[in-house]
Image (cartoon, rainbow, N blue to C red):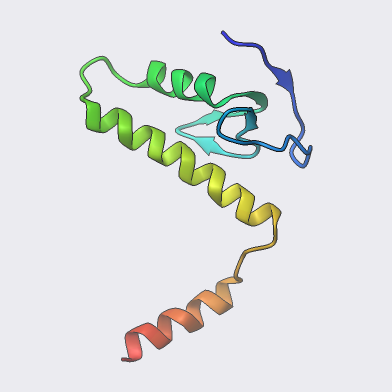
Length: 97
């Protein structure tokens, strides 16, 4: 495994594509990420959890999922969120048309 350091949620790890990144509070497929590891190590861990009979699309989907989780965490950290009530109002607007 690659080098890792323990990180608490809220620690400023300034992730980028090529530096250390923290999944933070993500709980994907029952695996809680609590270590700060490189993106490469996160991808390798995810691939190693997949069954042996997968195809390239499955691997791509897994990587896409990890990227989406990290993007969502950044949105939360930066306050880009909506309440349930706001979302219900948006959905009502969409379905009323």
